Image (cartoon, one colour):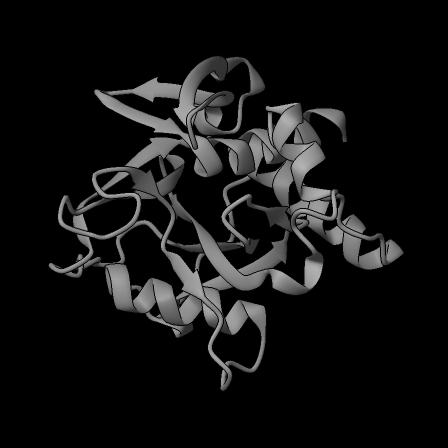
Length: 217
């Protein structure tokens, strides 16, 4: 399957490609993704959560490219899952011992969850790690695919697949801060709403980080 080159009429996607090309060219380290809640950042950098305890995981930020523009693809998790049930997320999961790379993890999980095969995806880069108070170290990987590629949700994990235009999902102004209870404490989170969906938590934090990086480059 041919993966199309992003349209010149999609300036945000062109900026995304330049951003990752510059990182590769200059061998820059990927800045870590910080939580909007500073108390969580302090917890992560404290002896209470030693780095050796983290489990490595990856998510794919799938960007569908078409003649009419690009969009970021999300999943809505099924209600019966043991974690993050009913929440919006990116396809992803824990790195297996036989995964060749963190990109391999992201692509494998993406194929399992939404049926997007690895050969249909053009990986353009990765972001810095997001350390979670749950003990996970998550690496977001960014990949492009043709908008007309058929996607099939895994009935066990994915209730819906939907997309948000990149000019909305990668616009820092789309995001707002909110509060929620986490481990019996009030925490600050990022969120944005689109077409009846609430994108929040780690998913919103990852996208907001990328949006700010693009705005600054």
